[in-house]
Length: 402
Length: 86
Image (cartoon, rainbow over all chains, first blue to last red; front, side, top):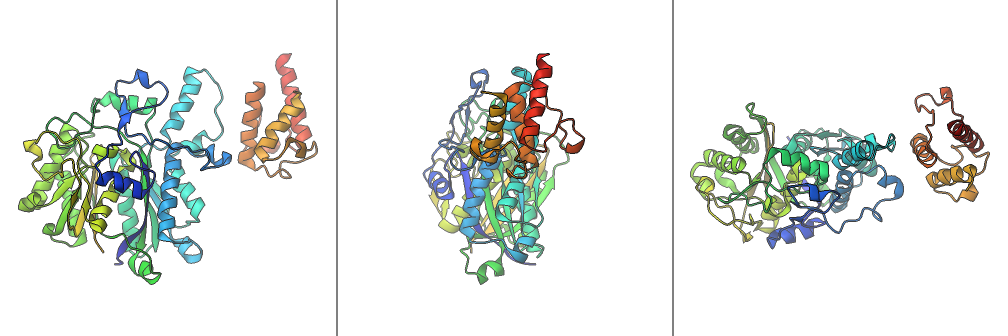
């Protein structure tokens, strides 16, 4: 079994257009959630979200790229560029042949579906642009990354709703660990902040109209965000031999299915994924200092997640820190695990724990140290990143400082 | 603008050329337009003239639409516009 390390990280989300900007916002506990701005927003009852602002695709991409790149692909390419440039890897020869791209997304090109349905249904047009399909397909982002960086190894897209990124990264981790690939580009992206995307979510009645307040007794639902988080996972000896900067090590992962309900989370399923990751990493639960929670801010998730953590860690649950950065960047659905892994890297590398902002009232059912409202300096050796998706599909990653 | 000039403008934009560089005897290959570029050009032409071009990318040779060079494409479009107006 090979050791696996992260040698590059990239992101764009409502907190920043790069990793340094995003981490600074997390340290300062800034909120990227605000009024949504897109066509027909006045017909929505949910009017807030973590939208990426100040971002113009024009200028970053040429005309031919623009007609092929949905917003979720644009986000992916921006994050991948930052990650791959930081890693310093150039994919040629055998490295290119064996390295691939595994990315998560729940909806793929949602705004492309939305704009073209609007065009044929509402505007009565009978013809759509020929690239609608290659633009909206869920694997478009992975394919464009592979083309842009000459990644010719195993490449595909994972779609497990809110756990898509963590499932993608778990898979990439296992491929590097097994020796199948020397490096993998992995993470996820989502962009469903458009009229149809938010309207669909409204139907479930789990969205907050004012703020995402994970673990707070007065929480009233989730808030959607958008963005991408992409990483370079690399075999440790390969990274060491070329003197690469190592951000942290990935030491384990586990995936589980609740096999119970299509939307309600299960404590047992979550607990099996958490304890599975610890077992896979071959560590004692007491070594874990920080958990980046799934922490959606819904009544059901937060209490179930806290109960699962309490079950797995026993008395140590009161010693570790657990925070939900969704309070700042919103729930990026299939891309959320990618951006949230950054909070784990910040904890392990910089010794800074991102806070759960918007925390107002303690909830006895979420009685853990949720790092309320302000970031905290702490020395953490092992961190976990939780993702528990609709459909009961769970994926947890374990990381260690290097 | 004549039909010919409009079609040349659309093709030039796709090829990232000046309209003056698109000759009547240029082939799509000469202009560097690949199969995706072709379907995109046809879409732009359909939008510009509100016509339906009978072109199937699976079997371009079998389509009732000649794409052998720019002049042939223009002639085909003129015919389609005339049929629509008839």
